[in-house]
Image (cartoon, rainbow, N blue to C red; front, side, top):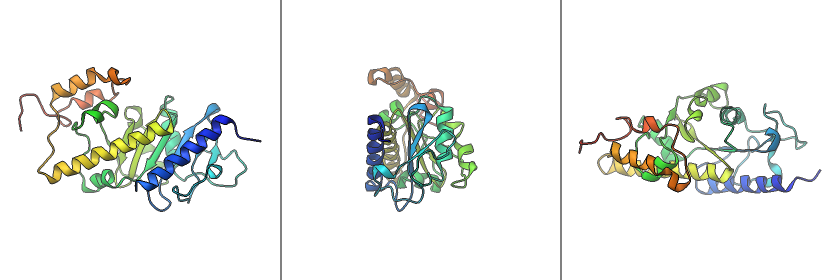
Length: 239
């Protein structure tokens, strides 16, 4: 049976994002996995043990909402599909997920340094805060458990010593959030090299949260955490 017009586009877009992640060195070898939630809760996802930079649209795998393959390709879905399904089940609004291993963001977790600082207005408005999920053994249920609570409040997160997860209204939205996450990490790294990170003040973050509607966005679910002393500078403190 021929694929629907919508599925053809989903396949093309998912492969486009996968190849872009490979080109941007957010993944290497056979790393990473990507998915799109289609109609009737069918999941279009990347196959296991494949180089995502060389994928073709007809190599993607269709599964049901329990991760069982429903096409005749004979290919296995990613061993980390369960992580995607956990996020989808927690967030009905999420339609696509990108999981990659961006070097700088993951490097912060290896160094034990936080990314949960309010330093860039664009990040505050689009992602809110970037938390770190506890370490979990890849391709096991530990991964799903480690991100289950975080995905209810965050659209992008880093996984300790592992990778990053970005959730979106479509696959491109998820990819752009991954780019924003890594750009935030790169900026933080430069700031550390130049002498240290100086977060935005509480009042500055409050103003940003008040204007997110200008960009067609909703106030992040993690807004309260954004205003904590751990995330931004207390007003009146010039250090």
